[in-house]
Amino acid sequence: MQQPLEALKTLLQTDQRFLLIAHKSPDGDAVGSLVGMFHLLKNLGKKVEVVLPDPPAVNIVGFLKGTDCLFYSSDSNAVENRFMEADCLICLDFNAISRVGYMQYLLAGFQGKKVLIDHHTEPENFADITISEVSCSSTCQLIYQCFEGMDLLSSMDQHAARCLYLGMTTDTGSFRFPSVTAKTHKIVADLIERGIEQWKIHQEVFDNNSVDQLQLRGFAVSEKLVLLNQGSHGFPFGYIWLTKDDLARFNYQPGDTEGLVNTILSIEGMKAGVLIQEKSDGIKMSFRSKDEVHVNQFAKKHFNGGGHVYAAGGFSPDSMDVTISKLLSLMHELFPR
Ligand code: 5GP
Ligand code: MN
Image 1 (cartoon, protein in one colour):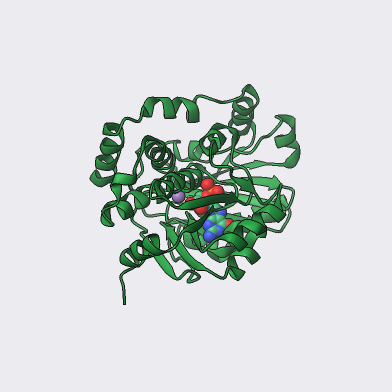
Image 2: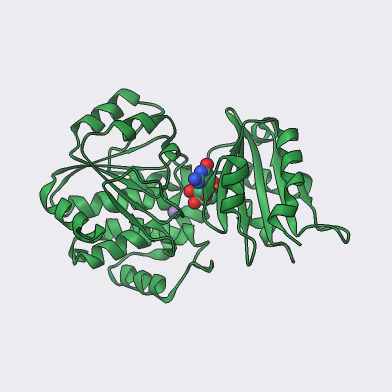
């Protein structure tokens, strides 16, 4: 049997019409890998289309420029057509079909070849070719390594390099998480040598906050943060809970609470935390942890989610109160004594 990377190379030599997709509520790594791959394949002379379940946050939406990306949430018929026209579907930065939300049936029913390129743990077995590298700090880094491994880095132009840098910096907390290796920095060095201006990308992504967003974050930390580390039976855990009304009060836009959960981990002694947000379809949970505390299995077992060892998401169909009670009753599982 061919190794996955060899199989991908063969596919790139044979198939012509590619459709690229990433997960819902796309973050920097989803958008970076989607658009990075778009440019890499275009430069190989392929016909490439991109679709997403829904739009990304305003600070990264600019990276989609020039791709004619369609969103299923606003144009489902046109997205269906793109699925019908493609020979090959490349799925980026997700490990479970459910991560594409309402587009699941299109992915499951796709007739052509399916490729998955991802770095989350325990990928589902839905693709013909699965390139899964859990130790890789971002899907963008993995795409670079794939093209390096296929000897196709000559197709890396500045557009692609900029996008890969986007995912690499956002998924690593600006290169500070344990997933960052010497290889990560070597790749970044190469991207900079190819002419990207990394400081401009940082400005675009991180210095583009609205006042509402900053005030929502301030409110969340001062009024809605609960720490469980008090007393001898406490846990080094904190949570921030935001209701629909809280979000509406600060004119919430997608992306406004991105990274907010990390403020919990920045508190001295904290080992894990969760951001709990009330959305129209239920309660969205964003877990983060460090050191010996792992959150992906916890999120998977109790909150219909998953992700990485130190960063996972979940969803609760219950009310805010019930969700928080359930979470508190499970603390001993996250912190066995
Ligand atoms: P976030 O908290 O930023 O939404 O997600 C953290 C990590 O967990 C991301 O890598 C994301 O892809 C993953 N993740 C978030 N929500 C879910 C979910 O519902 N299911 C799974 N399997 N992974 C998720
Ligand atoms: Mn990622």
